[in-house]
Image (cartoon, rainbow, N blue to C red; front, side):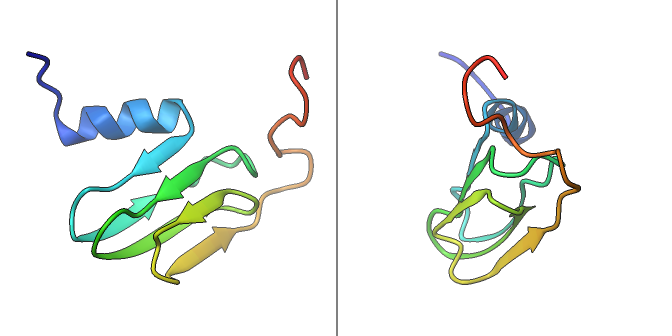
Length: 81
């Protein structure tokens, strides 16, 4: 059986551009300075999601803050860029 703690799970989720919460009241921080490369999923309960402009927000209960990103810091549009 694989044992993984919440901090380790969050690290892996952020590395792969996906953050999901399983707790009822959450603050999800997906800010990494790159626009449009993350999906933040609040899951169940009342969530507050903070991410970069262009990121995808799901199940955040309308509690979304999109942080401005400097020009040129967006995710690549095509593979190989």
